[in-house]
Length: 590
Image (cartoon, rainbow, N blue to C red; front, side, top):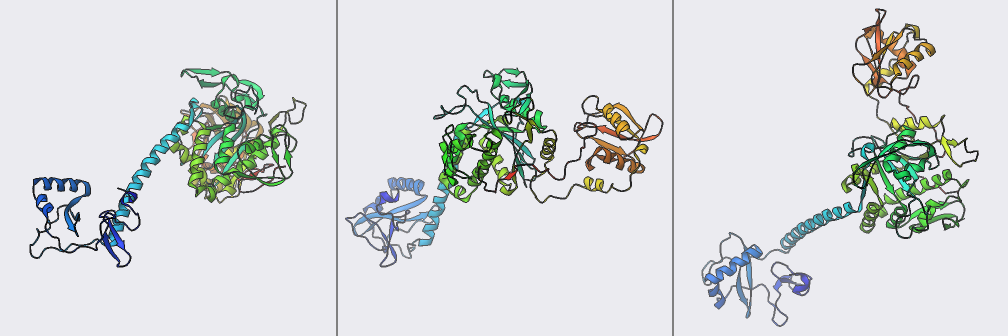
């Protein structure tokens, strides 16, 4: 029976229905409104009920009371009213019958003990209820998430111990209520907005690399899973816009992931895909996102209408903000990307703010909105895994989350400024290498390098002349012909004439290695400097005999080999990138 069922909820002892009398400070038994109340009664007087209770039927009744209340309770009479006597613990001595000498006095529970007992019981109930509800709610959220099988384009699971790359894809498909007037009415859902999010292994930094939709790329062949579970290979196409890597010819997000690897050399581990509704629901769930404009905007295409300065946007306005193109900069996609990055940074700040994290209502709305908005690969398709991804990203300080765009130049084949673009061959490779090698684009404290790298640094002493370097080159997993290509480069460009092609290695290696004997250290220093070998590639050991019968080092080209003359040393500092911003900075769109 709850407090309302008992009458007044204040100061009621739920166990025995005693009420605290504020005048006396004592508990009094609460009777019906027509019956008088008494203070804690004295010795019991025998009555007919007592004698009946002593029989078989009374024992049965007490047995039922034991099962319900955890102890026996005799009935006693207080000023003419039959009321339950004090309960005793299971297994305790029964109360002596009436009239027996030295009978045990009735002990009253202290207020503190009663409160403690019922608080503990109530807490246990709440924990069970919340735990059950939490489990059921997680299962509910699980049903919100849509997964797509992209085969080996994505990893099978998520590791909390490694660096990871997630490709975030925003499509222009007009799915969802109220989106009929947006985007290309005939679009099959192209990759309209694309961000490759790299999170460093030590979680000190992250890089969000925007890939322009109008970037001209070669889309590779890709295997897709059909509705009936069968596999179909979609033929690749060369010289097309990046956004056609999704939707066109039935391509799925796995095709976009493969295209990213083709263009950047960076392999996405997973993907998250959202449509127009995601922007509307997420911004509404957090109560709006703050944006800043350098000038007022009234865009007839997107219907964005905002004054200069600070504004809070959500829902349709937020979608209009990220879709607007003709009101920013040169009215092209590159300037819209900058505005979208500013919006993403503001959304990140709002989602991680105390205003959001301390509001159960907002958190529930956010969980619902996020799970309903996402389509992901099977490797991160569970709510628990998505939670792990979010928690790992949350470890990165906003000041060390960098937003940048793939360095590009206008496509010379167009003859039109900013119509389409191509990767800038002079600056983009350094950006891609920095991300692949887990190098931060912000200043962060780095741990000391591994012992092998420290040892490699000590090899900067006196070198041997290139003409004195004797090395046999083997292919241990690099592309076919790499050993000969390297030999030609060493002899022709670097003057390492005592080098020779030794064919294929006995086994493939993931990393390039250079094995040398102690007395060949000067030669190892020279070759490491010429080839840009990292300290981890140097392997002190023994020499081999070359075709002239002289001792030589062994250079085995592993799967990480990039080509003759291309350094394998990870950059120690990321290159400067035009337009770079960080998630902690408030910027105004212009």
